Length: 400
Ligand code: MN3
Image 1 (cartoon, rainbow, N blue to C red):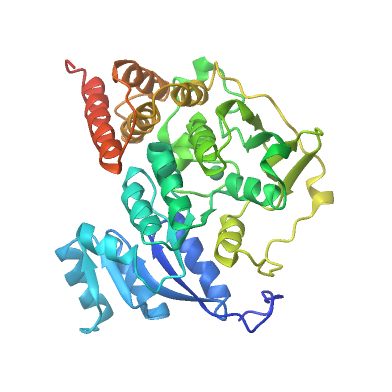
Image 2: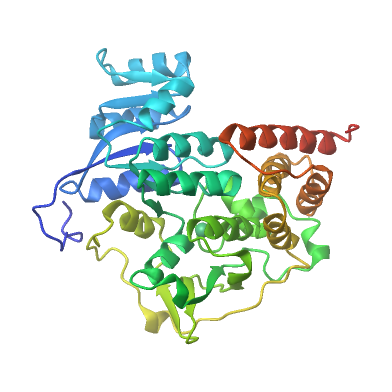
């Protein structure tokens, strides 16, 4: 172990067996890095990835997982060739993903897939009765009630990996629900915090990809710039902590030193401050209930100097308002919000639509969609599919 990282907790702890679903993405590689730094705490049990066979092969050579899952036959052949181990158990497709996400000897399953394709793995993992570290906010946006009630029934801890929710989770430790006045989610405000609507019309994907604080995948980076990311996080918080939307507030805090706060009924506020590094909330989730010692992330408050706060501007960032609106109606509205956003962001990224078209398309889809309750995962996936079709038609200018 590198000497800058040392474990301050009891060394006699049992190795935690971790399955990483989505191991080659942004959260996945950060999770792997945390596991690498704490070899006496964690062992990799399963790795699942889509198409990035090269990186997955490296991870397999380093961690020798018991189970590996990839997208299909082609990826399996490539992976077998790359690793050169005929005996390696490589699963494929939906069944493979399901098995990797619900292995009986897992201690913790990390759901690191982004987008709506994370929903089923989250469901399978919770249903298997193992604790999960959840980085996929769409699971809760699309089926928050189903996932959280299933977790309660199965006695599963959902440990948040999203930095804001990790912060809230930590601020709530040892406090009673009745003590909470409100949850305060912080937002960096993204790279266009000070742009006028006029300036936003000409924004390019390259400009949106240049996030001032965090290095993340493309979808979440563009979502951060529109503040849809914060909107999705409000919905995520609503289900994760079971507080009504009116108790969840967003404030813009460009320094991203405070990751979120909880205000209590005596109007005192507890905040979590740290450097903006995903590995911190991953360490919290993986180590839970312990705190893993590390001096990689020393924060120099004197150097930071000052912290500033602003109210979010819903005129310039309508996505945030759309997310609150979606929470007011039937459950399928948050599915529609997320589905149309996924399609619009992809179209913006591919330069098919403009930046300010993103909220317009979401708004149109939410208006055209017929809201209904979500009673199963299949329901959520069906609404997701229908709204995505609708968004694609709107973008192509076809008749609905
Ligand atoms: Mn976040």
